[in-house]
Image 1 (cartoon, rainbow, N blue to C red):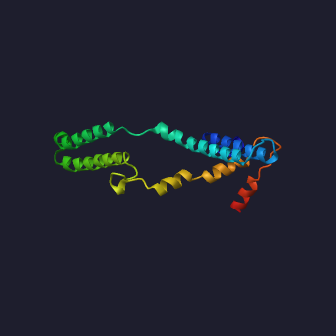
Image 2 (image 1 turned 45 degrees about the vertical axis):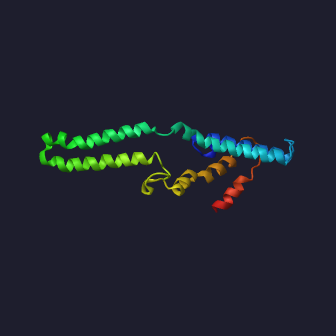
Length: 172
């Protein structure tokens, strides 16, 4: 696993690639007796498992409850309304620009937190939404090297992988 050069958080993906490569090699040399339906099903299941690996962090993160955003709306509105009265005894006329800065900062922060509830713009302002093309490119960044590097280093002495030659031809 260490020879792949990937971080320890990527080891599960490396093992999945190894399972797929060893299974394909076993089907090719006759160690695994199967027909084309088995091969198709195996690849489909490995792909589904790979997809589920990516969902683990999404499920762990979860979605922000709506009640939290409503509470933040009330607290920030209260802060913005009461800020001039609280700041005036200490700052005098300087409390006017300070209140404007507080309002700008906290209202902007509130709008940002609201955009997390509807990140793809189904109901909200299009200017605050996540750009899906950027999100996909960031998720796929390094994915090519992850899968190629995981398949290039296999445990065992008798397995000759063709992936390192493919990787060399794409990099040169």
